[in-house]
Length: 205
Image (cartoon, rainbow, N blue to C red; front, side):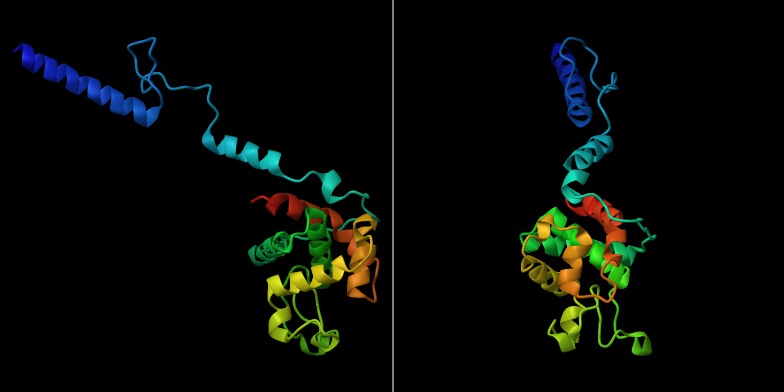
């Protein structure tokens, strides 16, 4: 009988330990396990992860070091447009460039294509401009297939940006215009805030 009681007690203890491992550490100061007294003070895992993500976001002083110029514009983005913004961020990191370069690149794409990877638009096309940055094959940016590839087109834009002396110290619109040589050189400035928000959201995501 004593042997049977001991086995039964061990079985119950084993269940208690298993339950403690699943739900959290056992409370050694009490006979009650963590299953019966959940740790209500601990923040939910999702909230902790969210807090970490917030802490990891680049700050606005890094993203917009010179302040914005002019009235800022903002558009709602589809899933595809967000994917293209993420592709620009990924290509910027792969190229070894910083968050500010990603802001310049995304603002440029917002102006040129609204972050849409555009093919040839026929009569509405500006010459043979295509892709996220409206780059032209005839101007040496690459083939149509290349400039409609988000990673290639971003890398090509950043290569041009690297060649601009002191681009980090320029207003965004001046840096972008030096690469793009647009007929509307000041239009890039309006997208700086939205571009910075996108980089903050996706740089460490």
